[in-house]
Image (cartoon, rainbow, N blue to C red; front, side, top):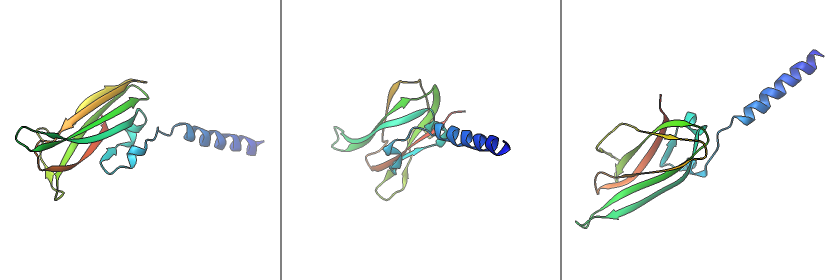
Length: 130
């Protein structure tokens, strides 16, 4: 009898652990994307794009766009870190996280443009806002 109770308790723990896995996106494997585990329970990144925007001067600026789908009412912060061809960080206008909120079933789109034509790559960071 005690063995059966212990077995049922262990089984319920295993099943509840499976039920709390965050939604997963193949985008999370990209080097350009860093998503804190706490945020993954409330949203999933569904799209991540980059393109170069031609400027009248002949230069171009890197622009990043991404989309999220809400799984729960989630407040999160996001920022983009910019890098030049040598891998050195290129400072932007603001270093802080931009705050956003997504509701269950809601799709939101965000974009950011590099501060200088020398920007060659980026990393997008998403984290939980406290």
